[in-house]
Image (tube, rainbow, N blue to C red; front, side):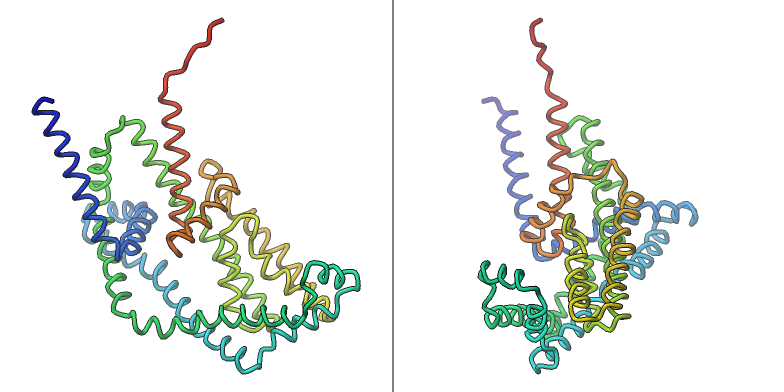
Length: 354
């Protein structure tokens, strides 16, 4: 082994060690760093436009972009999260006090089913009404309790939240100001041909914008519309249901219908025909069409992945990375597909003998 080869191997080992150590020390605030990168990508076009308007003054353009990002994207999430925690605490108290009798709703719903449907439930092992009532009540109580306890947890973790929030906004400013230079240095460090690096970079940007700008905006719109109609119809805890519909809208083949559908059926079965018809019509004609109208406009056909892949990668991302996983999961899946496509296209094709 010559001296140059030994030096290269030693450098590779050193790079691996310091990279692992660097990632390790960043792990406590990986969420703040990740969202700073995501927001930097999303607001980069605005940053470039402002940079031209302010005469190439990078600090001013980055500061104004960061402020706009704070007002448009960050503060609404914080406010809605606080309201959701309060709503969850109220819902938990109503369930515990018996003011919201979920078990009674279940019992009345089962009694209104036709005989064959009740027999089918019995055959499926769901005929034990008391056990079914207890399970549903327990699930509802536990879910609302989780939201209720977040108020106390937030109070204990206020320092960590403030530090993480500060890191995110601080890094966002520098990513906006130095973004082009950072991307250039990263591309220089990646040991791939230039056309492959450009392809991966474009795919990364497109998937981030499609996932956040497209899917999240569609989910927010569907959740807001669902919460609005729930509030108009007088359904308790409309904000909780709105957030649930928005979350489920991120999952293909599931959607917000899994929330408003059973409520509409319950209205129809309990004789509230007008409310049931209104909710069904609004869910199908308004909430359901949002996905078909907005998603192609915001996402585009060239960034779409198969629905089954989005579903699996989103669920897997949420399981591994928590709430951040709804972006990380599809992003990893898209980069996985792109990397293998690049690898397949770079291999020489074997000509079969005629």
